[in-house]
Each structure stands twice: as C-alpha cells, then as structure tokens.
Length: 389
Image 1 (cartoon, one colour):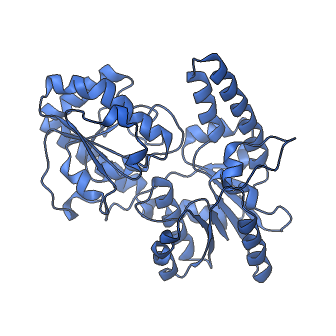
Image 2: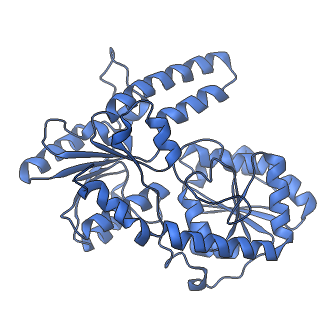
C-alpha cells in the first residue's frame, strides 16, 4: 500500500516522477494499491497510466483542515495534509485486503500510516523538512521573523524526528540527507536511494529542435520555494551581468506554476523568456545551450539536473544543487557558489561550444551508468523485499 502526498504524474514535478517510477518498478513484482491526494478533479484522468500498469488507484481530494492540536503544536505541513477522508480511506483499504508493506511518500503522509498493523512501514523522505526550516531561520535577518522561523524549525524538528522513528526503513535522496537524519534516527533504518531518470526518453537524439547557442534554461515547479528563489537570484544578480558579456544571451524559465514567481522581479526584463508548463520538456532542454541551477536552499536530489544531464546539456549548478551526483567539477558539471562564479562559468560555456560538448558527453555517460532507472531499480526493490533490512 503506497500513500502519496501528490499524484504520481510524469511531468508534474521531480517528486512525482520519482513516485511514478517507484510504483512502476514495485508493480512489476508486487500487487500495489495507491492512495493519493489530488488537488483538482482534473488530475485524476492523468493517473490512468498507473492503472494500465496493474496498480489499483484511489484518490482523495485534498482540502486543508483546521488545526486540532492547540496543546501539542505540529508544523504547518501536518494541517495542510490532515484529512479525515484520507485516513478513512486508508483504514477501509487495510480492512478489505491484507498488505505486507505500507509506504509513505513525503513525510507529510506519515500521519496517515497506522502503527497498530503488523506490516513493514517505509517512509521516503523526499526532503529533510526540518533542515530546510533551519536554513530559513539562519538566513532571516529581521528579529521578529527570525524568532518565528526559529520556533517553526524546533516544532518541525521535534515532530519529524519523532515521526521518522515510527518507520522500519527510511529512504533518503542523498548521502548528505542520510547523514543529517542519522543524528536523530537509528542509522540502521536509513538508506540513500537516489532518484533516477529514463535516459532512453531523455535522449537528445530522440528530439528534434533548433538549439540556440546563447540560451540558458531553468526548469522547476515554482510552488517549491527554492525554485522561485533560484529564478529571482539569477534574474536580479546574474542575467544582467551575463548580457554585458554576451548581449544576445537569453534566459528561459520553464515549468509549472510560473504565476507564483514574483512579477516585480520577472516582468519586463531584457533577455528573459517565461515559457511556463510544456507538455514535452525535452524540447526546452534540446533548444538551450546551458542549464543553470542556482539553488541555495532545500535538500534532496534535483530531477531537473538528472533530465538536463541525460539530455547531454552543459550544466552550471551550486554545490547544493549538485548533491547526490557523483560528478567532479569540470568533468560532467561546473559548480558555482555565488553570482560572480555563475557569471564566469556560464559566459565561458556560452562562448565555448567544445567545452559544452565535452561536458554534455560526460554527463550523459554518467547518467546511463549510474542514474538510469534500470540501474537504480534494484535499490527500490531491496527497500521492500530485503529481509535483512
């Protein structure tokens, strides 16, 4: 039984893609039932792909419920995903059929996993939320807001650490995430299971597109704050300086929920092109020369980088964005820690097609050898089938 906070729909987000392939791999050898939140009824038909794989799909329309825990504070995410209807659906499903494993995707779903059933309980920590809260607290400069964010951090830390201890196995996206969580949870319960990518689909040879040697690209779901922050940083502090060096340089922004970006920053900017959601994101990757990932907050592994690297793109990313990849600077990816470094590395790539080609070839080879779903599938299966834990 798999419980998901968002519908596992390809193209919706990186987390959704991971959940989709996780279900596909598990469903190839197991009987799988999915109960997923959906935000709109229109999302339900897009889950038909899972049904075609033999997975039983049930959905619950997500509506935040009022807080009912005045004396024992819980984080905002708890209320956002609290649902009597979802909890009832889980209980009815467990009563109607016997399950060996209950797997929760995203920590927000931990509240819906019953602890009184003799089953293996697995949690996928797509992000270490309390670590994100700590980063927000450290970055805040206003005293009052810093106090609020400090309180939020401690509430989240207490709740998340306690909740994780209710699971027999926990999958983290990166070794860095596993180390963070190991301070509060028995290391024996933790595994680093990276996200993969379908390199046969994200193959530059499968997509015909006219590439612009001066185009930079960023892809993300802008409901996720680190993605919006990355775009705002690049538009304000990097793009104008790149265009001083390369006047024809263009920065394209693709992905879901671009309306959530700060229009005061993104409106009427020379060289900025807001694309939004694209059904086949490969066209965007194929048409750009450089992929930039100026991500400074958040945890987990970035699917956008997996896709860009699989498409043989030259990538400039922060060390944080590149976490989870066994790639050295200068071989399959270039890293940049601040605005000046992003300007220098990106301009170098825009002016040097040979370097772009070399990085892209190495990047695609790395993906095929280490991060293709066919390579990672065994780790997903071991998570639920390995009797030794």
